[in-house]
Amino acid sequence: MTPDQFIFLLCAALIIASAIMVVTSKNLVHSALWLVATLFGVAILYALLQAAFLALVQVVVYIGAIAILFIFAVMLTRRELRDKGPQLNQNWGLSAVMAVFTFGGLFYILSSWSGFSAKAVEIPVGTDPLRMLGYALVSPDAYVLPFEVASILLLAALVGAVYIATASKK
Amino acid sequence: MSIPLSWYLVLSAALFSIGLFGVLARKNAVAILLGIELMLNAVNINLVAFWRYGSTASLAGQVFAIIVFAVAAAEVAVGLALIISVYRRRTTVIADELDLLKW
Image (cartoon, each protein chain N blue to C red):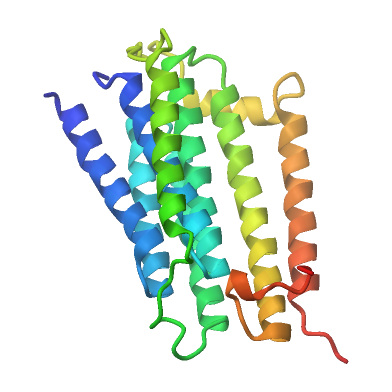
């Protein structure tokens, strides 16, 4: 086993274990903190895949903003005794069966695909994926339009979230 | 780079299924959003893995992952604002109890 594979397996164990804790933990604050662990594992995976920018954005945006937003939302909507009872609804057995079947179906479809066990080729020397990504995001013949649309979407979401969450004066 | 693509795909399928279970089985609306976050992350792992194992000169996979980041941030902001607004009016965030539209 190469060091790469060892790091991957450790990281996968971290992701799966903390993801299971996210969906089963009784205390929602703990769920949100386990989500941070999952997101950190995914950031390590991006680093393994040589997507340095995405690994950083994952830590800054996902862990720094989204996970903290979740913790604030849990604190704002908390009531006494809500952590005590069962956190799963009465259909949880059916949900578990469905999740297992989804995994099985995905695994079956993927394993019958010819590129399933493809190996990565080395990134050619002299090309810097980070620099290429930077150019691609602002170049008119690449992805400048989706990039701008994403910023408009964020602005709309910002305005909408402020409008919805503001208490009405009535 | 001795990791086969299949490892990433299986891990992301497992993460997606766990997220799906969270969305379907949790009572609390905030916990349902946590499940959606797990599913979005599974998708992102797939996108970046396909970028790395396909042609690295074409950056569509990474750019798409960045768009998914933006959409996830927007979705969480609006979703949590809705939950807080619902909590103000109904003083509950249990999805089963929000049955005003159910006749």
